[in-house]
Image: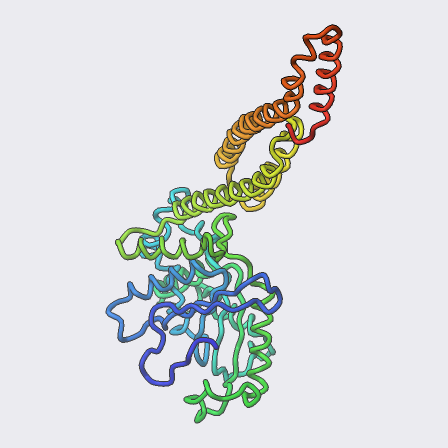
Length: 396
């Protein structure tokens, strides 16, 4: 039914929890929701754990939802500062993306869009005496300080501005929702058991807007055009997650490009196998009618190839060098040669059997052919045998 809610002073979620749900607007799709433990948990040994949680959430998601409580103040934004910690992020994400060594900001293409959710929001959305939207409020908080403000704190302003600048660069697409309290404060501890109809109308309104935005904006997760599906035969997203986790456990850097290359290789190998399997099933259908005339065999085989290639072209991933396409074509060409040989052998055997069936009359009337006029009879019988043979179907 969803993620459970913690109601004590102790952190409830540990690591990353996963919950797959059907997309309400497209039954062919599934939404995979990831819930991470809160950043800055006092029970954790050090901040490295938070960095890896952030890295995993960023690399596996195409929408990152950041929760903060009360207001979007400086302390709240500090937990969203990991992109600005360039050295640490480079160590874990960027350094192994060789094409981006000169500019760590190029990594922004691997970052998801950002949604900031301010829970239990009680303030009035107003800036400089004028009403504003939640997005305006967020952009105001992300705004870079002007040099003339807060004189004497130039270094602090530099750090502040650097964090905001890099944060805005990485999360180019962002949106904010301000959620009022869902229930009265005394009922928050039992929120998980309260029916939706008993939640405050203002909270339900924002929640519906938030959900609608997610459903509208969510896209397939991809790495450089490689869609990370969850199909059973080859769950690309699971493979990517396993590679990232393996890198973290071994102390290596997460290599996005190498991960993509491995996923592409595995995906295309699976597509080739699927195409071969479809081709094999199609060939089995024509084997039932063996032997066939050679021209018919080539025609039927071409249809089998077309179906297999259609499957391959539909699901192949970044096969720019046509390596896997050539492999599949070679497999089917070799199979075609074997089919032609097999068809020829069957045809010869059926022809032999049919000729034997037709020729027995010649053996029986052998003596008649030795009599005067026997040669004419022999010619007539051989002509009849020839006619019957060529009228026989199924000889290939």
